[in-house]
Length: 225
Image (tube, rainbow, N blue to C red; front, side, top):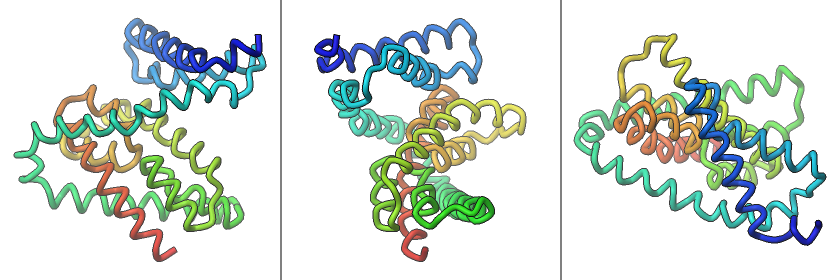
């Protein structure tokens, strides 16, 4: 069986299978909590644990799927182009919102880490949790963080954003589409942006722009840490 687990097609098949199941459940339940990404992660992890499959074997094919992360993020540029007039009109509010959001994210992370008496390596690993993985890893490395912890924090933050943003927007009665996009993109990067796209193309476009601005802001803030 070990030959099957180490086959690159196994990781690819398992990833798509789990996400497909998550999508089907999401369509049946019709609730933000039944997020396909969250369900896919839980299902994939459960299968690996039940059959005692090592993460190393899974990632032989999983890395192939990861190759599509950057191209899929770049596709957001199409929505941004379509909504360029709104972006031109709201450019400075979007920039200010992203900068403030980044400051709050980093500030609250550091504060909570101090309260919980975490060591410096852990603090450094968690600081860039709200930005996209490529930027987060560089920031974490420069601050002396641990890559594995940073990756886990980024995944957790993005997944939580994708699940809870629609709920928070609904109950906080946040009507402004631009504000919705800024909030999602700044706090939960590309994973959260999947929920922004479902809310509307304006939210998706603004969230896509916010990913970049929040990433730049976080890098600059980290220089002073």
